[in-house]
Length: 420
Image (cartoon, rainbow, N blue to C red; front, top):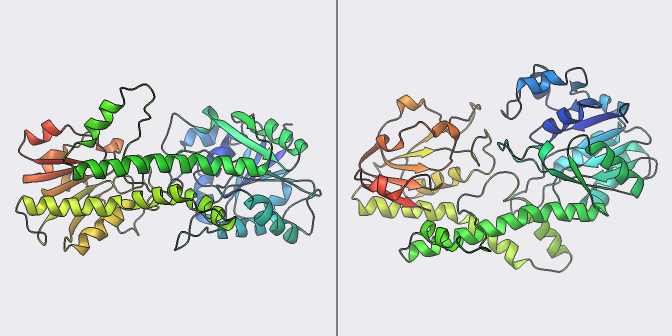
């Protein structure tokens, strides 16, 4: 029903696009505790560079942004979209879920539905979040209601936007689930799961499956390198078989793929099952940056370039292409590994960064020097017109993490090529 008011709490990569889509039909309140973020959104500016100003303008009459938690009390539906990172030791960090549940709980009106979008382990919504909501609101489930619809946002991906995918929804009862089907159908296609726990499990295995598959290709790439074989050529040949599933080796960073498996693994151990494959995959992908660092050192030694004076350029630092997000960037790990070998002359060119307080520099392309090693780490669109090889010194080394270059093109110009 169009008269419903929806509050989206948490206006990051997940919450903001969802709020704007809801505002096509419903009155929407966008709530975030960060005042600076709210003021930017009021001006139609998204610092994540994911939403164009026109998208704000198209629904300006249906949405308001606020950092005042009291606005939550005016909502019939409250959607919580906050991060679920990991702590040191890769333990689940539920602090964002806890604090947001407290905030929503103490401002929750009777009869409202609270929907969680955050990725977590099966049982978290009902066993961890619900008691907080009940305590803070002074109500019991039945006086308010609970739902879950796991986010499927892929930052920087303009093809699989929220209105072009399926959203899984689930509720604490059939009536709530049906209401969520109705509401989310305004945004995109909807699949109704039979329970909140099943929806939670479905989400966490989506990312775990991808993580394990990438880990296999990372392991194969490192193995074939040891054997002196080009893994990319092997993968291309294998991909001619109809049922071969192609994935790509590389750095696995960000706030989803390398994080979510730990949530499932922690729950698995809690119920008495040790998830060998899941954790092995994590270990493999975490070893890629140190492996690349050792490869760079080996190639520098083989080409007679002293480590202490070697100049290295990292092209890209964000966890994936075309996003200004450094969370769990493996480039930082690579830089630190190189420093441990005495290689301190490292420059990072990251055109997507807007943060000034980052460890990464972002020099103007025209100011780039000549380097002994260039690591093509992130395939940003902004690198399309950059003549990468022109910035290599004599007998320079190109480390092609993304397999963007052809070996013969690099070697024909007298440079050394290595691809993951």
